[in-house]
Length: 132
Image 1 (cartoon, rainbow, N blue to C red):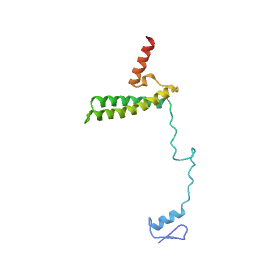
Image 2: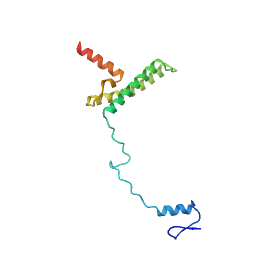
Image 3: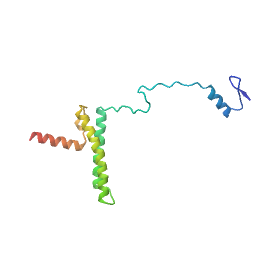
Image 4: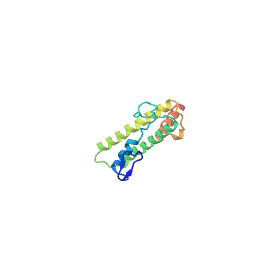
């Protein structure tokens, strides 16, 4: 039999249940750092800067391509199912578009070349209407 470091308990073999109990008794409580925000379950604040806006524009462009594919190539059992799928995709895209437009109105800078193709068409038509 092996003797434990404090000579009060005896350990039969390395890795036995009694050795685990000894480790459990001798381990010290560790102080974890306190959370600055208060609750550990709170979500981090979303940073809404030019990089976030650029990723929104990329995602909107992706949804535009998905919608075009749904409308042209995807096979559905009925036309009603096609319209339902397109409606769901359009709703998701519209939410992203509202967020992107709000950020642009709030003054978040962006490069015009980063705009989705559907936004470029809207801004070009608005510019032509202002010229005429």
